[in-house]
Image (cartoon, rainbow, N blue to C red):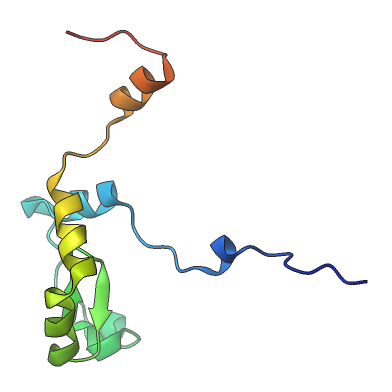
Length: 101
């Protein structure tokens, strides 16, 4: 009999950027530049309508405006306001380092 459910849904889901990667991109010195026509050709709406906080492209202005009003976008903005989780905090949580205070 063939095995069912060989691949979990984790394999099939689209990989989105983590919060620390998005926070790094939102810094003033790392603001994304305008895409060239060749780079934007495959993106929805030719790369014109981009939500930096959610790292998503939209086909038209109406879809982008609806996204900005949506609850998932607002939740993402709240998550981005929190400070990024650092490697030092991870080491402390794992019991690998001494507190610095």
